[in-house]
Length: 412
Image 1 (cartoon, helix red, strand yellow):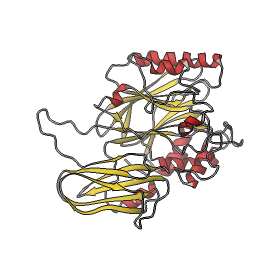
Image 2: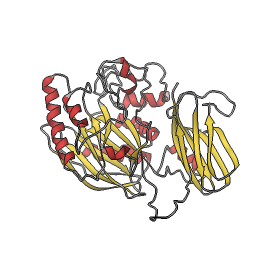
Image 3: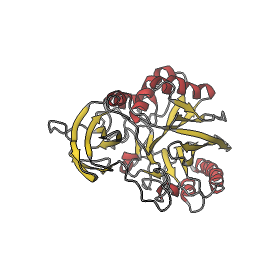
């Protein structure tokens, strides 16, 4: 699956850029798209999507079919012509939701929606092409605003969703992504999502509490990127965790498709912008250009998570073949992280760190290595030993004809 265009251009001379066994998923409220400012916002969305490098995007606040097609044609196809498709689009009441996916990485094999009193809750059944694993993605945009009346309306919407989840085949993994408009984990709608039963969901980062206007939750707030009014949207600064990804237990049971721990994040949120806009001073996790794009594109931050897909099934009783593997922990990290990799056979290996522009930052290993499990520590420094800036980096392991790439985040 493809990653940042600049990184792709750099890696094209070195071999495949595929992140075998990984799917990057993103939930993104794209603010009444296209509205009257779509053409102005499209380049900013392009910057955000390029830097996130997702394989699946669940978008909320899509105005209609024209808007759904516009995001595909004027944002995604500009980044990667012909590389994206859109799942079945349901043009329902109020604003809508859409699903976009990388062609050749996954297929949409079924779709539908749950009708509620306000906005429908849409779902798509996804097949991961490499592994054949099938799972469902649901996306919602629940009733907004505070007060008991609105909490009860959200509860009514989630009750209908939960009925649908409870009726799924017990082997079907499912994910809920969207703009929940929920202010605290004790709200009845949220408690129903996490309550025991066949359709139970879990919060991958497990940070319950009163999220609204609480600096203790600043690192997970997703709205609002703005404190001034332009092009619509909220202007209250970063003080709410409206946007979330929740998963069923199948994503953390050790078999089949799994969450990659430590990858869930509100993209562009460094925890240092509580009650202010995302471009107020330097951003600790993304570049100024990406922070600006997040600010200009929408009043919500996208939420990102990586899924693991399983390796090919082995024949019963056979000894599993050792495969090239790469892992990084901790991730995000500060000030250092350990890179571990497994070589199926001895050979010449290179382990190189690149920045988001595709430029080499440092080389951790280059030369002959024995087969087996090996590790290197990256101290967050460049070739000259100087500390690098906070942000996203890519570790690339090349061994013979195989390669692996892993995204890491340095947070200072």
